Length: 189
Image (cartoon, rainbow, N blue to C red; front, side, top):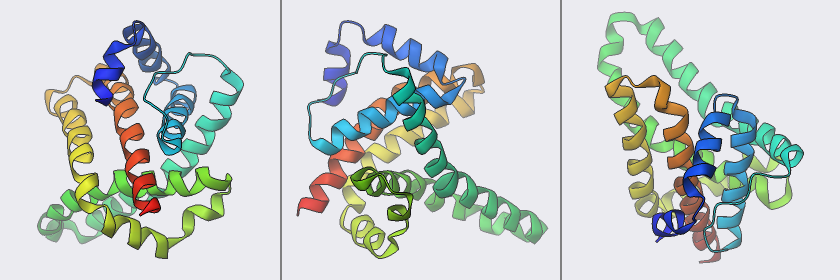
């Protein structure tokens, strides 16, 4: 239904192209994705917002980026460093990338959700609540996460790097909305 609503917006292509272009300088597109995430958290119907309020988009984009760095970039960099230290033995541990990759999206979305409740970064570190939400929602998170990762993997495997910002933004509009709705529904239960 979300993708159906996406395509029902008569300006969906224009909005996604703008988002993809702005993803080259990601702060504004991250702010836009955060706006979509918040709309999913509120339980609002999916729609692509207009590209306006650039100052608010930039501020929200910085918040999105900081949470992304802490909950995705740093853990991945740490794992890469550990694998580098292990050297040849690291090939055995490369299989660990699969669960890490599939957990990055849900963990990031839960952190974003916790932040969005009160707008405080310290709320992102409520790890006991992570365990509950990640365990409760494992099956619900699986399909959107696999779809989003698969979409990004197609670009990586075909080495069409120039398309990555567009694909990330387009897939992200659907992924972040759905994940916010799922987390909201789990919190209500």
